[in-house]
Length: 332
Image (cartoon, rainbow, N blue to C red; front, top):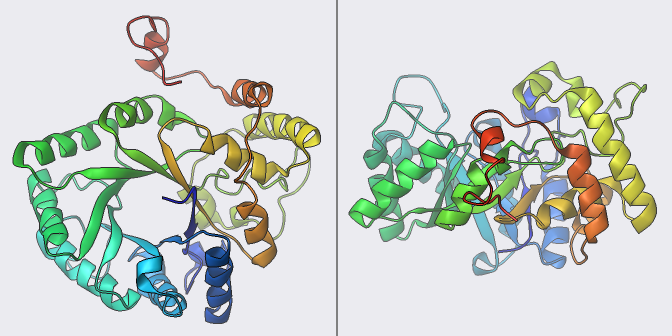
């Protein structure tokens, strides 16, 4: 799996939430996909709910210029897609309807990774996993994954798959960044134990680690955080904490000659369980800059500096567990 995955949420943007990131035309989408492929990034992520299917349609058109076997496509379902009680969740009815819709919009007869976009506590776990297993056996899905699950959601799902010999989640798409390290507390140890790779969404902290957000300065006009809808839907770290992390990134940037986003992305690539980072880009320049986050490694002292600046007190029982690492070691 490539270290970077391109997130196509800006493709076909047709509502305030996705327009807060960017509005990418079909021509721009074609060009961005071409740049990614030329750079060796052949993994693309979207979801049925992104702009009500428009993202999948735009991505499908952009990928139609490339050999299907040469690309990896990830999409998701679970969130509401239309009116009525059956047009939401991870039920058999909704999943069958949504997968077929996604395949049509993407212009393909299979997807490489199919995510449950969130945990559905209203549908039996065995119904969801049995349906996913059938998708795999039918060849419509290559691998299954989840997103935004808590530890017990994921462990229960893995247990059900093991009990019946069904396909199991091999990936977990999670929020993880230098200003959002909660993933390390329980989900990372679980992933290490169970062999589940992390696909990291919003690795730049919901736009806070671009290098443009500074102490004492107004938000950039093009920041997604200018949109209340986008701001409130994402993580809400204390801004003084963000500034502290950015200060440390500034120091590392001076030492390495790299940009703040490149350092923030590279730091994540060195963390346990991280398989790929889902990156986006407003334009070609930003995309090429993010692509340059791979192919090199931060040295131990720089990692230590970033670790210290971004460390926060843990919630219970995690703060208690860190006192007894002889028998319950932390991920290294």
